[in-house]
Length: 245
Ligand code: FPP
Image (cartoon, rainbow, N blue to C red; front, side):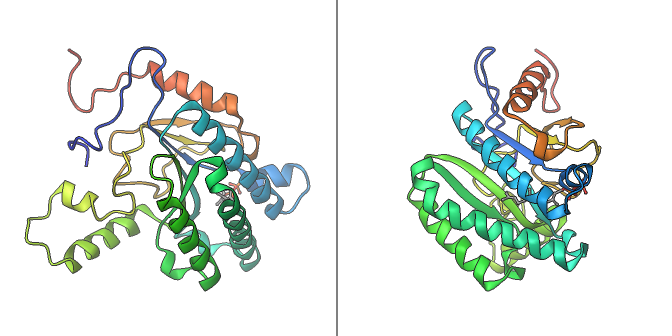
């Protein structure tokens, strides 16, 4: 999608530029809990609080989008207990967001295949979508839930086909069918927790994203870590396949 005006990556002006869109693979909740002798669910609960802090910080910095990987299409392989715990946490988070979205000026958007989620979660997602429509120009927090990059591409192709397209299949046409339609590609993708892979996250959208890996476990990730990541981002030379002028 990168050649279109809407999704052209944002370079901003001068040294104060912030990325338009940061995406994060929030890794390390389980290890954070183990280090404290706590159950994995405590790590996820701490991780949800970190997400809340980091989203508020990104809004305050003037970013347009923060996207986080909360539950992948592969995470169903975890124990029933852990999956149930994460789903309950997400329900709690959505309930709180419904109360607070307008006051906080944060548009919450769920990305991924929601058809496999519980009816209760789907109903809450519908309610957040309704509220989000009343907040067109606000900072947007995208939470990827039952999300996989390959799955997103397959679902996008199915959507394009189902629409009975008259035009040929182009990057732009497919982008418009992705879960991320209308969202600029991430300028920067951060992975916490000391693993160095992309794990099926935003495969289509990451074509020209800057990547940053850090050892910090997600629950320990702070506002300063975001500021430091933005400093590193500013020092990167983004050429998008071109050469320096
Ligand atoms: C990765 O850590 C984390 C997850 C798969 C779940 C992320 C979920 C949350 C942060 C909670 C809900 C989020 C929101 C947005 C309310 P891991 O469990 O793989 O950690 P490990 O590698 O140390 O085991």
